Image (cartoon, rainbow, N blue to C red; front, side, top):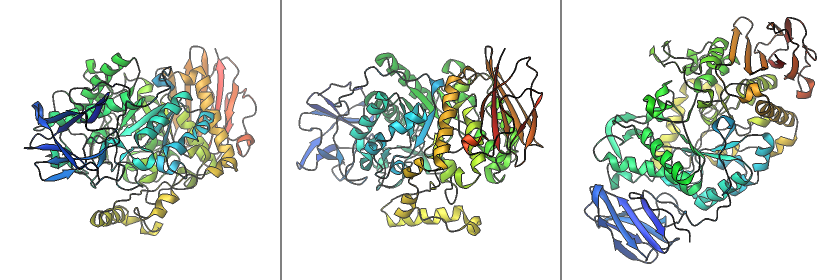
Length: 613
């Protein structure tokens, strides 16, 4: 059995050779014991400083089932359980994550600016919905050209159907997916094939069913209200133990599961006014781990605050995160492509804002937001392109629509190609959502499998209330129904059928172009010029690296449009035209190589030209 380092405050059960170390944080308990449910034994823990209770014993082995007994009264699963084979309410399973035969000793994580991310949901990515089944599709992703997969949260949740954001055991890997061993096997397989693995983790709330955290200690605080109730306690009384719990969780994914990057969900909902923000502390500990192991890891955040503090370096007063999602690029692109400016889209005017996002990353960097009713954002002038992640669709933007329609159901085939290209020619990190590369028509809807009747009904009614104004569009899919889950699965047979096969080839070509052309591969925000024309819904993006230049000419209008070419003194090379018959388009107007000072574009198309100085 491989020996792993046991840190001072590592929660749960960890193993050193044949000895188990049990550590529970329960600062207000009078007695704490571990119950071995199959052996019928109860072992008392001893109190330590800072609210911890510990036990070192040779009577607990990997595979044993156990619960934690508090004050001699009630017993609960371990808050730091690594395995919940019988669900969120039942006994935990002792597991040694260090006892896995890794074969990725030669793996080196990709430089961040080489990430092309593919977001997926394990349960709906394949018919089986497991890590093992996902492994069988890795060659498809290699062929596509992505360099990293991003797993939606896999922390143990109630039942077998959930987006993952209702997880209640942040240390345990969803058992129906394959558990901890299945995830380790998947990561090892990805590394053998040259794929990095990003894991989505949730540190801003915990799910409602199976949530026994308050029985153990003040994991939550009433100081702040969040969309999910009381906030996780990062800065109130006894918050040190809570902070250590989440810091150790992040380190565990890096150390024991060889995860390459974490995507931290909705960090704007983390409430922490400590002198040292919890994100800063997670980053500091992650960098220390990297120094110890020699492995490189990244921390990516989802934030809607347009605040560079999250991604600025600690020495510059920032939290030190490596990158962040930019919803605003998505919103501007969607409105440009025809999305109605309603709800949070109401702040976006379309192509002019898309051009601003290409140039400035944030659309709102100090202007008044009508939707928010206040001035919003700060400039991101000093942050390189690799710190921003952009997309034309993701799990949120699809699944939070009433019917969960993908882009393939909302716009034409030609517009889908244009939107894909708009993302992949950006100076930012591109993210694709599973199935978009072949224009998957199935929706991605909201689904859960709670077992508590009151909670089930509350979820149903909440979903109906959210879309009460949209009855004319049909009934809200029942989030509890297995049919909703099954309807959200990918249809892999489509990959070999038209027009899906052509769409896949188009994505593969775009990704290869992004990697191979120096002007696209180098994510410089300085070597970039962009101009947009609102009346014609056209945009010209110019990027360059040394003497290599690309012009990306985009026409989002339903009519042919003429764009002016810059004076270069050089001839243009035609690199890609989405309107080519090769891509099932109407046929290019531009010809092989434009020679005049203007070029004519087909509706809803992109023409990429190159030239050298």
